[in-house]
Every structure is written in C-alpha cells, then in structure tokens.
Image (cartoon, rainbow, N blue to C red; front, side):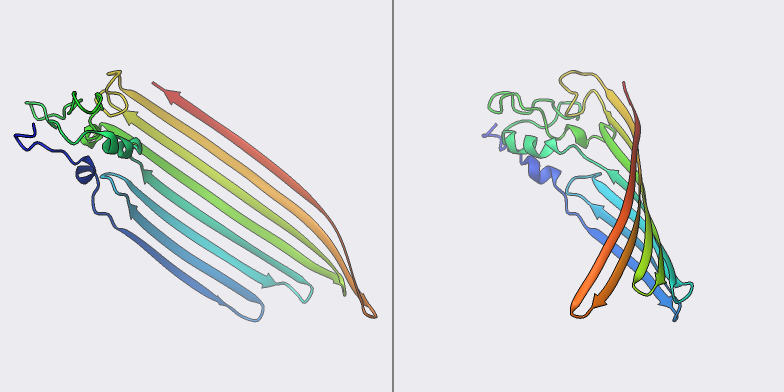
Length: 239
C-alpha cells in the first residue's frame, strides 16, 4: 500500500468549507400613549459536514399601551421555526481513529466497510454516511413564547400588577440509518425512528405593592401569588 502511495486523510475528505448568514429586520414606533415593536429574522447555518444544516425563522411583535394615567397593559409574542438536518457526530471520532493506509473503494465503486483491516483494528469506514440516503436525521421545532401584563396604580403608593407567560415547544424528529450506514453496517439492519414531543407551560403571577415614605424611612410592602403549570406529551416509534 505504501509502495502504491495509497494514503487516506478522512478529515480532509469529510470536512467541507461552510458558511452562515443571519438577517434581522426590526421596526419600532409609537406615540405618547402607545409603543410597539416588530421584528423578523432568518438564519442559515451550514455545518462542517455535507448535508449538515440548520435554518431558523423567527417573528416577534410586542407593544405597550396606557389606557389611562393609572392603567397600563402590554404584551409580547415570539415565534420561532427551526429546521435542523443533522449528521452523525461520531464520524469525527471515527475519522480521527481510522488508519491513514487503506483502500477506500470496492471494485464496484462502493465504499469499503473496512478500508484498513490490518493496522486500524477493523475500524469502519468513516465515509459510509457520505452516500445519499444512508443516514438521515431531521429535526423540526416550533416554539411560541408569549407574555402579557396589566398594571394598575390603585391609589398613590399602592399598585397591582398581573403577568401571564406561556411557553409552547413542539418538536418533531425523524431519523433513518440504512443497513450500510456507519452506525448499522455491523448489524446489517436498517433502522428508522420517529419522535414527537410537545412541551407546554404557563406562569401567572400577581403582585400587590405598597410604597410610602415617612421622614427618612422608605416603607415597601409586597404580597403576591404565582401559579405554574407544565405539561409534556410525546410519542416515539422505532422500527
């Protein structure tokens, strides 16, 4: 092999030049009673491996409004949608452990399972997942985060505020490894997995505040309550 100058640099073959882009657009405005904000965002991030990519879209809107001198309300909502095409991270360790001497291809042009059966302790070929469709791992995430408040100055020094926050996270994940993929080449069995997970929570708190100055003393008394609820549901199918 050395005589024939057959030397393999797996990291050089696996790692590619990558790029990322991030764009944000925001608008704000208002008057003496109201204020609002609006923003849009997009991110496209390519990883160091082929078909390793993450895209994110986000939208945010919020505002505050004075109903009167003593009443104020406001709300914000953020929505994010993310797509992650994920590669097998074990490939990096495999590329580092694989021997530099060997034969990459079979005679029919397919990747050899064990390029170097002599010196690399039967290390599987780190290039096996480079075949389109051999390994697929897609994650789709929808997230909504929102908050709203109501503030009332009942009398001078006495105020009441209520806040409500919600958090919704919907995750869908699909994964497939063919019988010839890096993870499944030893068992020679294809495997597929579909996983869905939903996370939902809300927080509601109420605060009553009293403030008063007596001479050189500042007095502040607070009373409040908080309610929190969390729910998780999910399914997973493997075959």
